[in-house]
Amino acid sequence: MKKIIIFIFSLMIVFTGCSAKQSAETSKNENSNSVNENTSSPKDNEPKLAYTITTEGAFFENDLYDVALYYPYITGGSKAEDITTEIKKINDERLNNIKEIYEKYTEDNVISQMYLDTYFDYSMCDNFLSVKYTVYEFLGGAHGSTSIFTYNVMNGNDSLLSVSDFFKDDVNHKDVLDKIICDKIIADKDKYFPDAQKTVWQTNYDKKFYINNKGELVIYFSEYELAPYVAGTVEFNIPPSELKPYLKDEYYTLLTQMNSDTLMKFNGEPKEFRNMPRFNVDDFGYEECYLPLREVCELIGYTVTDDKAGNLLINGKNILEFGEPLLVAEIEYVPCEMFNNFDRVLEKDFRSKIVYDNDVIKIFKVNS
Image 1 (cartoon, helix red, strand yellow):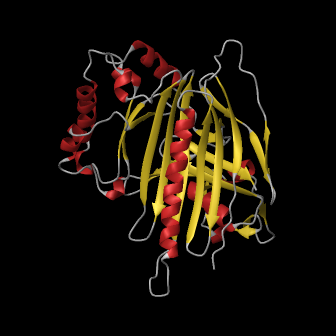
Image 2: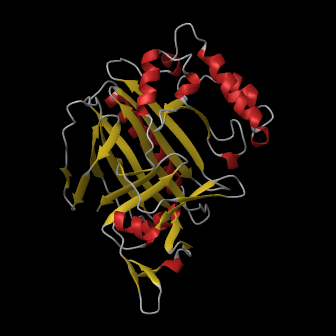
């Protein structure tokens, strides 16, 4: 029997300068959605940004699939509507695919539990916006797959930016990027397929890039393009200082202005920790992020208590049902993913998600 729970929410993001600021609350009943917006005016010496981003979410679940979509609704500047439409199209295609597989389910045609998760990040400065949209799917088999979609736009332009737009007219950007990327591959050649450099030479970078929160140009390759599945999506982060001789002056200035030391975003707004996160690299080279349990629970809205027996409880449930915290200087730390397990299991009046992808810790929360 299908049971579908649908939830749509909006969070208004307000930006000042070249950093993201977001503050919102959402509420929902059976018949309507409403948004309370908190806005602030930019400082006199800070330019008003061209784009406004609203975070929307949709959640569906039944006995055989679990879908959690966090995606941007972009307004205000050139190509904003086109980017939003394209991302919604991606969501619809992926969701319809899962539903089609589900419709084929019979007792004789057994399918496994399916998952579809999306989230996004962005960097923005003045009239420039770079959006990275990540889609994870598990439709059965040995493992899931991750796809990345990126959109880079300068307000006033009639089309999305290509990576070549960032480089001086007399510079062969392909040669410059090929050398930088191939040098990185040679320096860590055991990680890549033997023909990885050949793949690089054959790749058109124009739509396979974004600008991260540090103002770095990031060229990315899909799973299996350069390395085995365990390597995931392969990204090469190139700081503007390395590209300074080749970039147009206006783009070099833009990228250096975007450099941020933000470690965590909460609903898009930079957030500082009282107790810093800890990072551990496993045997496969994967960097796992550990967060201070009580501090993040307080931030998201979980209740942490200790019972008479000394057990640590999260919303009344023993933490050991999820895993044992790591104790560092009397502070309990847990992996990011444990908070996502809280979201799946614990009763509460909100939905939340934490993502760490070797860039910024992104925490999403929405009241339900």
